[in-house]
Image 1 (cartoon, rainbow, N blue to C red):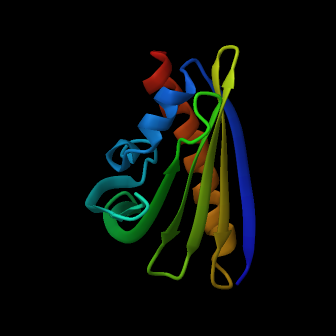
Image 2: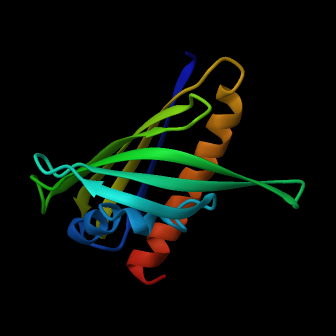
Amino acid sequence: MPSTELKHRFEIAAPPERVFAHLAEPSNYIGLSPLLVAVRDVHRTETDGTLHYTAVERFRFLGVLTHDNIIGVTLVAAPERLPARAEITGEVRSPARVRMSYRFTIDRHASGSVVTDTLHLRTPPGLLRFAASQAGAVQQNRARVLTARLSGA
């Protein structure tokens, strides 16, 4: 399957603990992506605390037609190195065989935190360009919304 990696790094005037807590909660992702409209069926694995949930992305076509893309998400939050650093990783599985692994690395910085948002996309042939453009737009939006939410901007 064709693949690509997207990386976006940005600063937030909030401590890593606060950024980590926000990104470790699935319901907080609503609004971080303009496509994400719902999070449901959240389950925590008893042995390691991994979260599994269903997310709903809503695509609009021609401003009238909509398509709800139901995706399975796994989220692993690793606070072991807080307060200096934390990571959140996971995997997204879409019905169109689009796979995306993600990693947020949150590092302490003089102004609060530096977040590195890394996405690795794998798609069937012919879908990579579209998926990468959508994912890149979501990364940029996520940085703006997260910064506004957590720094009070």
